[in-house]
Image (tube, rainbow, N blue to C red; front, side):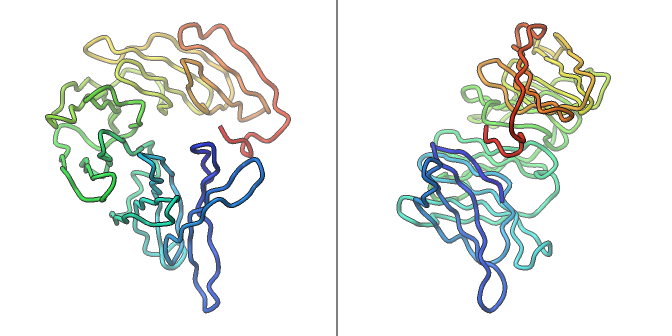
Length: 275
């Protein structure tokens, strides 16, 4: 299962074999300094394939695909866990789709609500009860390709559709406030960062492009070609961390000056490092 570094702790779901067969799964909270288990909360029977773990309002929200038998009959679950009290606060079941596995679709935390991007709709649920507050059906566009907490600006939520349109959505009035034409780019791209005004995208073969919202469309401001396969690890304070998939190298560039590159050579496998 995925291990997340959250709240200065390591959080992950672990599985254990039952004596009579099958699996049970629990959420673990580990102190990374001494590797001591701080808390453990039982999630349920079966196999939990963790997609992401969030820390909202003192609760851990576990987003997992679940199957009673490995790889068969999956459903998606959101589980809210109070680690301090050792309780599962609520557990919601959703239809399993490939959409959330193949795209960057993060939950959005806003004023005690969790906004969930689902197939052809948003659902907003209460953070502390899991009960549905409101729903919005997508009519103006196809499904979402990229959405993240960084995409939230005040009451407005921004995202990229599967057709590479840039969309703004007002959470209070639950209406579309901005819908661009398809973003013009000569290559198939993956989005690695998006806010209300800018977007960073990359291609697997090494092209990194920065876009800005001109009030009508997302337009390309610059493009850098690393000429080998890469992935973008993170964007922090306008600094982009780029991993080479050929060498043990991390390159950092600044969104305002991509020509000024800083290269770091790694001693360890990047897949064993938490960022």
